[in-house]
Amino acid sequence: MSETVMHVAGTSPYDVVVGRDLLDRLPSLLGGGVERVAVVHAEPQTDHARPVVEALAPHVEVLAVPVPDGEAAKTAEVAQRCWELLGEHGFTRSDAVVTVGGGAVTDLGGFVAATWLRGVRVVHVPTTLLGMVDAAVGGKTGINTAAGKNLVGSFHEPGGVLCDLATLDTLPPADLAAGLAEVVKCGFIADPAILELVEEHEPGDLTPHGPVVRELVERAVRVKVDVVTADLRETGGSGGHPGREVLNYGHTLGHAIERHEGYRMRHGDAVAVGCVYAAELAGRAGVLAPEVVARHRDVLARVGLPTSYDAASFEELHATMKVDKKARGSRLRFVVLRGLADPVILEGPSEEHLRAAYDAIAGGAA
Image (cartoon, rainbow, N blue to C red; front, side):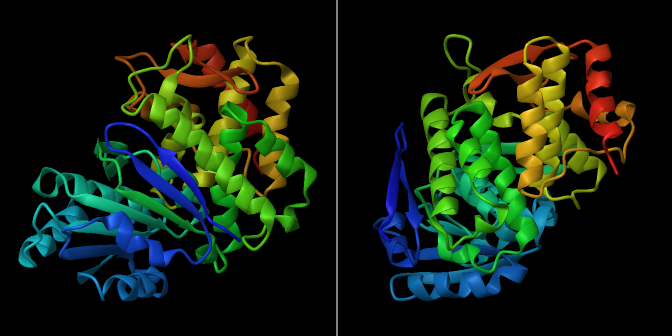
């Protein structure tokens, strides 16, 4: 099957390539003049990193940089270890970083590339569905602190992204489902055809080998490409559209849940609950019809994602949401929907509505 190339325009344009067996494209995405490449990968992802190293070795000097798995990689200590390795091996401004793995490695590796010598080239090779449709596209990088998720970071656009669907063949079903949370999110905020694809096909048909997952990936990536091209640095959209902030749909509560869980909960699982919460909040604020609120639960549950949560009190999560990146002063901001593909910002919702929406998701928890 041929590859699909989506171009991200802007001051630093790049291509997102979707297909299978794409590693031969990697050297060209790095560009000329690169002598050294650091391949940053999660320790359990050695099997995926090895072919990347082998593809690069005939062309450049390669340094493999294993890091902890998952959110444990996104710390200042791990970033510092990466910087020290780059220094020890003489990485210059013309050298590059390649990330191999899920969203956490993409966030960390992108941050290391953004901050080493004030910015070196980075190419992402996401090996999870979540990484392909979310972290790898758009140039956001970041690490976590005790105060919350992704509070330290920068914008650093990649030189390219390779979404090789072959890497999903061995992805555990729970991780595939977690990635579908971000895909479904794109359906609600911009492309309802995604929702229809999920609803029209049996969950068992959503496998990396089949055409449905490929179309879902391409549609979700296209949504993100269109959004970030129009509003790279999250300065706002036009005509009432939230701009890039729309990609945070479901993330305000989702990030709060992740922090409460010590980042042991999958990002996609937390975002799925967060999307249901945002829908319940919009319903209580009188801006979203009940049938669209209910559709959130139906579609997310259909792909095996959680739609309820009660392991923390409203007060605990409310306090965490107040330090979310999207807050302004003491006022919470939520991306909500007025209808399918019709997002707006709900600023300063009442505590009554916030609490009632949480009661709705907590009441359905097992």
